[in-house]
Length: 96
Image (spheres, rainbow, N blue to C red):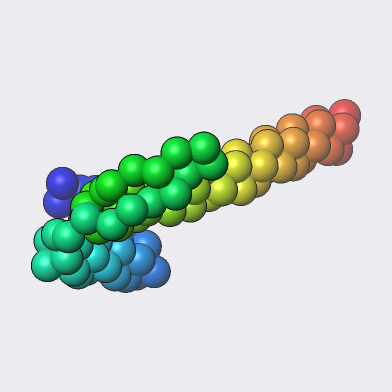
């Protein structure tokens, strides 16, 4: 774990700490609000404790953020791979 933490940049460490604090505060808020509310889905109504609703919403938000970050970094990885191959081809042409 120490090696992982030391390998992070300052921005990544800040993001990790802020995210952790936000999750803890969200969980505290959710636990303090353990009353049921009626949630209207498309075709049904369900009584759900506010706590579970908040936790589900936080998990869904985290999942969406992770999905969009993954797609962004996957696109950048493809671009980097393409540029590296172009650079390799250029270097091989220069050697000839």
